[in-house]
Length: 177
Image (cartoon, rainbow, N blue to C red):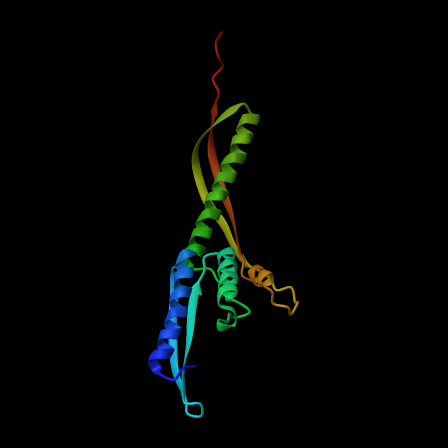
């Protein structure tokens, strides 16, 4: 709280600049800032409340940044007790793509083992077909304590892909002595 609008703007501006610099140092790029100016007739003072919305890419960066800012700014800053966790559309698409690639890789690896067992060489794939894709989100285990770990488990997405793959087997030629 300050006597003049300019004084309160300068005060909040310094803190916001410090927070934004800390966020840049921690490689957070998605930041939105909101400021609301209010005036108290009783005290004849101005107040600005600032809200900074940050999208962190991982929990470790979130924790490190939060701990650093609390250490440096103390009670002049507050954080929600329970952050919001979600997967961006791009991350979910990449997760699905990676699951499909892993399924094909695993089927090829298994086919290679079978071909070697039969003294054959594995040839080109003849057919690869996705049979089933299952996407499951974490399950709430019923405890009312909403810790960061339980929120992570709740928002973890698991993608399972089943593929049908047919590979060509090539007879190995016997070496002539």
